[in-house]
Length: 346
Image (tube, rainbow, N blue to C red; front, side):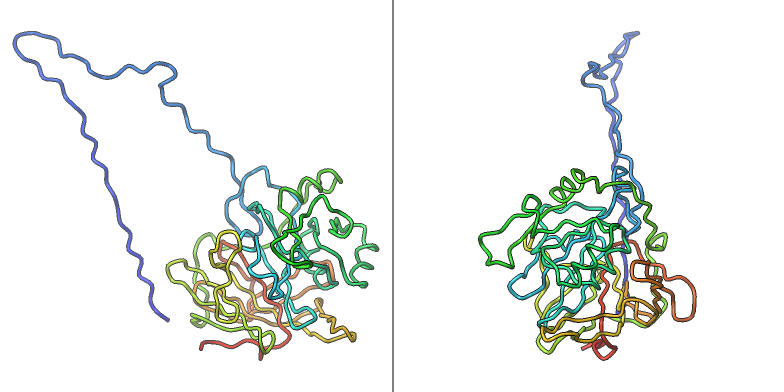
């Protein structure tokens, strides 16, 4: 792997102060210091209080402390790209769905997003991942088994676009069903109205204090082959100290900004996956234990995962033992059916 050299430049500003001169005998020097009126006097800078985001390890506004995160289902069918708001999410899951595509579950807390979508329907295994965050769960429709889960579990605070047209809007420049959008502001407004925003205690990840190398092998780029015609690639950017995401060899960009999606931490998590009906719907065994990889700062290492129950938190540990600590920043979790979907290098 290429060595990274960081040049630190120090800038020094020299301030010159004007000095009065005395000409002749005992004349008093003239004080040319300007006198400021009360309105002109410098006011102390009041910094907004900040706290650590439990999902990124970065600073966030204190008024978000204890707030219930937002978990939004986002489509990844070709007609849905580029999506909006994935770049603002603290955590994103990418998981197989029926029809030869994947789907995203995006978790929002630290940053607000003015447009999120296209929003699509729920599946049971996405509910399993979402409930680890005790969130407001946002979706547009659901499979029959997912609706059964949502109705049975009173601890799921859901907002469904099928029944709630206030939180969502349709973008007329795209065809339905690939055009339902929302925003963090809309979701929060609906959640407040319904009484969903009760304080929550969210202890999610362990983070390094600062940048830390991964004790493993170098990894400048890698591919994830979900389907024959659907390949995700991540390429390490040494300047950004993060991975740039590609879909089918093209940068995966945000619809609003046009900027590529950049990811600090990537977790590859292997889970048993099987087809359960003629529509191609899937069952993914989200509980139990398994293996995976952790990728960050241009290197990767093997990890293990354990999820004791459907709505319980997944614990990640290093293969040799010890808690996995992430580098501060966003995290993408790639759920894969088997190791042969992971290709290192070119």
